[in-house]
Image (cartoon, rainbow, N blue to C red; front, side, top):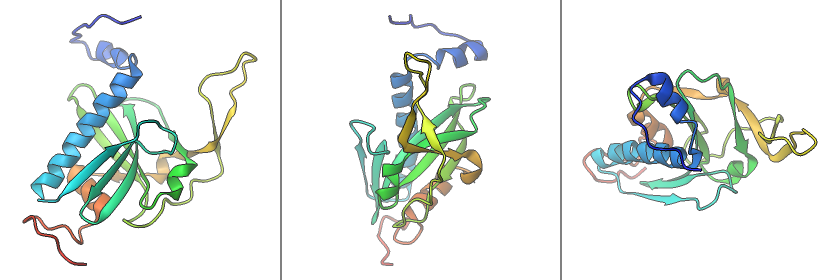
Length: 188
């Protein structure tokens, strides 16, 4: 059943509205993230390409190539004020060179990301160890049991680095070497 479109001036109503239409919400956040990321790369004169995962089976949502670096990125988004203390990460992401997780905190009041968190390593290196804590499905089966998701690990927020802004995230994702602000590529 489709929810009617409503304009809600009250913040709590807007936050509740964000819980509906999860697929549309995820795509909207992805577009905002990519818009900010791509604008930062454009301002630096960096040539880039973006590929989207059609299905979420390999642990990443996006593949972004900028300069000489290719990043497989898993996006996670939390609404500001949420109590989420960890995220589930697919173990297949660890097999990708330069795989990483970007965890964004959406603030519906300012309609922007109020915080950025990052989990990964420098360009060319694989993810740090994900740990041994196996994730569970969010929904229980007919017996009330939440089955284990053997290919997913729980990564707590304390393992993520706080990032000040999108410019700093671009530095972390793609490195400063090889990226010039005048549009030319620097040899490493």
